[in-house]
Image 1 (cartoon, rainbow, N blue to C red):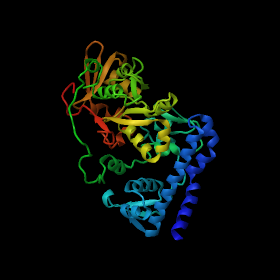
Image 2: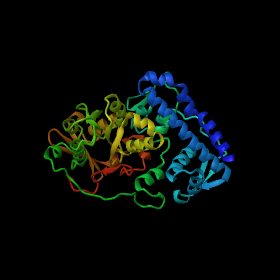
Image 3: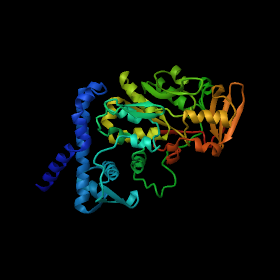
Length: 409
């Protein structure tokens, strides 16, 4: 009877949670926005209820035990280790529990401090200069209240229903790195003692197709991988970024064939909200999507897979995540300052950028090569980039970068 009562209490608390109530009472707005059908709305609401219920069960166990390890919680709740990790990470972010010790031996206790009962809109991330510009909040918002303008998300306060889903999707509100590492590796990961993130194999590679090598950044590996996926009918589309104008303004685009793919080859070195294109995947009736992104963008998708899988399923089915190595990114204004003030060339005259051997390179239409040490322009990088813990895109399915490879590879 006691166990049954605990479950009933957890159900009541789950139904009363801020996210569930905001989404439930916002049904009319969500349906009218046209992003989710009534069936998709009902499925996601059920998902939120189940998710909150399980989190309340985990919290009750920690409160009753005084302190508990992941294994102890999993045994008592009947949940998998991954499920428990998912919930304790969010409970920790909410301020409901505290962690003591590293991931492998972590012990969790209930917090007596202030809890995050309602999720703030991601405006606080933008105002703090921590926004990566990944575009995840744009695709996550169920009422399309967020748009990307001036290289940052803008919230329509009149449309917003305050559900906080954007907060959960954002890679900068909290990032369950140990959980992501365990999912990728397939076994527990202790980030404090493991010197190198998990990987299966490392290769130096180059595309065998000349038409790819002619337009690629280095070896054309990403373009070749995507071309293969299209050839084998493994994907319906891929999210990429193309150069939209001579002044290097990026444009997120949904690629559906190899000809379009070639237009996205090469690195742009300026911000593009790629994950927002999941909205376009749904609008065009496509499903199987390959996502190419820098670490913060891959982090956002991985978080959605963990904390909002039902919403992600309504937008598309990520078949593969291809991660690009990234040290820093620049605003379009900063990119112009680098080319004109540090390299002495017009941004419109540049046909390719590259970072290699500690320098930032620009190649012009006239065949000139200009370079400046990265340390001289590091201050121009986006503020958010200085807080990134992931150069090699360790949570992607395949990570690609030219570091350590010969030219053209």
